Length: 79
Image (cartoon, rainbow, N blue to C red; front, side, top):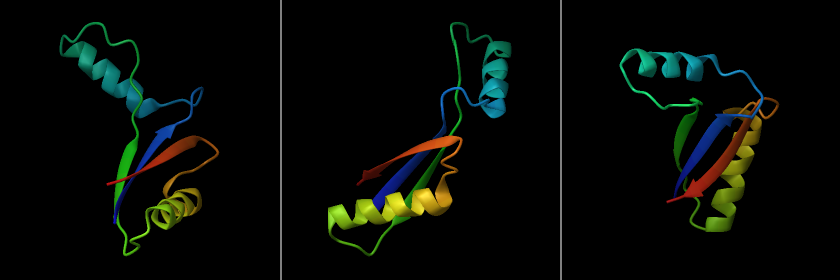
């Protein structure tokens, strides 16, 4: 079963990569972008076939390794 883990900086946490992207977009003439937050997507191909167990496993992976839960939030989607 495929799972996607979306990891983003929490609100209030500085995001220098997002700021740099926003600045670059502005420099390229794209107006009206108020804020940019940069995160990451991790795709997992899990052997688990039970959706509930797959979600639980992916969430545990995110908590233990894929996201720094002090400064990042995450969500899991199954495909």
